[in-house]
Length: 261
Image (cartoon, rainbow, N blue to C red; front, side):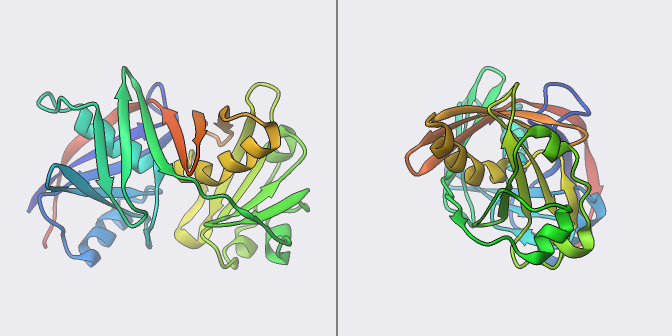
């Protein structure tokens, strides 16, 4: 069986920026083990698969070793693939997912994700988190991930994670964040338990970061930068129980794969 495959740099303005995601459009679902094997072979943070569902689409995301409930950059990448089709004229795409309906809106080159607001809850910093980051955060929260808050951007860029400790945590991963002089805030994301030592740009993390920083700053529109090696800029807006996350994307690769299914 031959399948189309795309590699899209999400939250990027040119190739080699942002977060690369593989996208495999399907007409019907493959066996879970086949999709997991494709994701493992791609060896990217996420591979997205989607199938048509009535007038919309159903999307699933796989890391190299697990299926996940929510992924921002691979959803942005999937929408980019659909919007890039000459016959696709709509400016809004709705995906059914394990996290409920997710929409992506196109306005020029800017794509906007409409994701659920996931306000994190305050917690004590686990010992494995402190050892894994090499320093104690000012504040610690939890939801889908741990959110560790630090004093400034230099604290964030200076972290050298010890993945031996971070992969012992009970949640998906760890988001580290701090205020910034150039953006409203910066962040990094580590999820070694899911085969992602450090994710370049993590759209779903901002469903947790945005409600936190909106409360801290009193603003509902914020700019953010994920200060990974590749880096990526995001424009975020809090709208009640939803978080809008906007960015650009570019196509790096298009081809076919041969799969026995």
